[in-house]
Figure 1 (tube, rainbow, N blue to C red):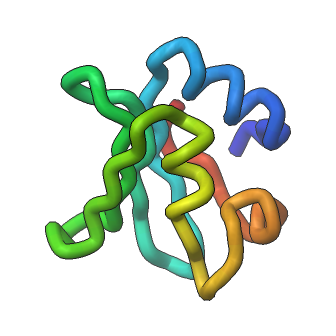
Figure 2 (cartoon, rainbow, N blue to C red):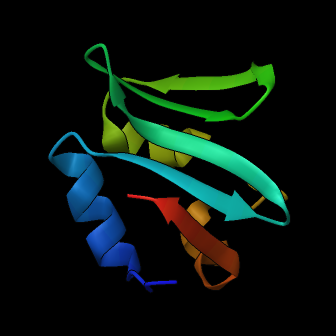
Length: 80
């Protein structure tokens, strides 16, 4: 497993990258698809969150009521 810094995560997303990551045995997607920044938990369509831009999306997304940055050490990047 390759480790990525939070800054690398942000940089990759800011250039249109898509990331699959694992947090507490659940897989999530975050990225820029169809011109919108989106986040969702796999197999849970009700979990979808759309942001106007990356900053807006990251302010909306919570994992256990915490921002991604706050739980970064518990996240495993699956596909980047």
